Image: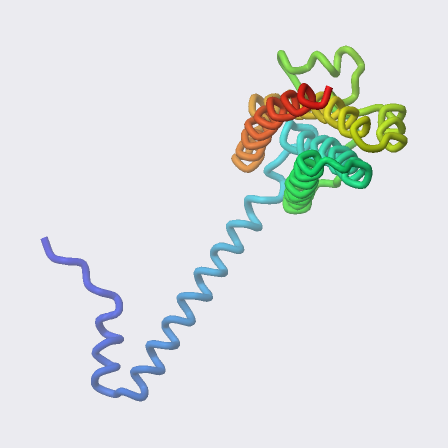
Length: 219
């Protein structure tokens, strides 16, 4: 069986025979190949990204609802950082704020890429199905979300009292976040949503255990 011909062999031969013109030809071939590769990649992205995610499916619903969920966690984290003198609580709050801001931005970008609006026509959590649909059926819009009254209580507190209120609220918030992430793992169709949902579920489960111990230490 003959060996497939090297497509650059003729270019190399020309380069050896005519150094100036050969180098120019090699550069031209490289530029053309690069442009073709970039163009092909852009065509694939434009053909596959918009429209591949349903307006009413779990992927878009999760991206919208988890942004709202995350941004409340960021608000609570900043509230306690301004009211706490406990460095461990302040460090935890900073970690939650930075990680969840980054993830919210990631989900915002997905919706832009998918050509979908940031807010949908359906109620929060309407995308959740199967065994994870209990909160929707019970009328709870989003699991773990703090009420306005609870947030007012955190705003009014200072010091150790603020730490305890924050930890209790954030434990419940994370439990709701894990529930939402697990629902997305069960129903989402895109790899990016399933990957982030799995990371959120694991990270927040770990943080729940940490916060439960911190709350016991401060009770």
